[in-house]
Length: 221
Image (tube, rainbow, N blue to C red):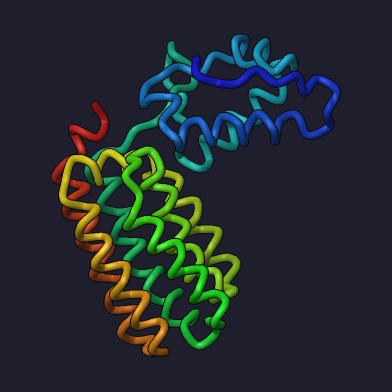
């Protein structure tokens, strides 16, 4: 199991730390879809009882990152085409509205940081970094909205698909297209055009959805 051993036996928030470590490993793809998450093995790795492990797995299941299967216990969950389509349809409803609300609140500092993330994404030749750089760019823009509940929901939604995005960018023309679309969204934000930024965000997500669904079987292999 690809996890770093951490002795947290004396920490009060043991379940939270186990949850965060497992969550990060799933999102990064270190734990593959269908991989069993054995409570005894995880408890030994973190030097804790099974109770915080059970709590952590329950939280992961609530976020859709883990599923409990009969006779197998907890395993890393995958995505069906229907689930993926629903996630992207949800993103197309919520994220354009977040951007629309965020644009009037974007300071020069926020826009400068967003341009930096956009540039870093466009210049990166490291496929392992692409999904994170993509998320950094969008998050910088979205955070200006200060819509805490919206942002939390979108963040959890992104957790479901982030481990696939890197592969999707590699298998398709996703990097080239994303670069063009990112800079277009950024320029609309810099111009203060909230409606254009929202429309471009919706179109961007729709394009990713099409490519994602086309490559889903390869992404999960």
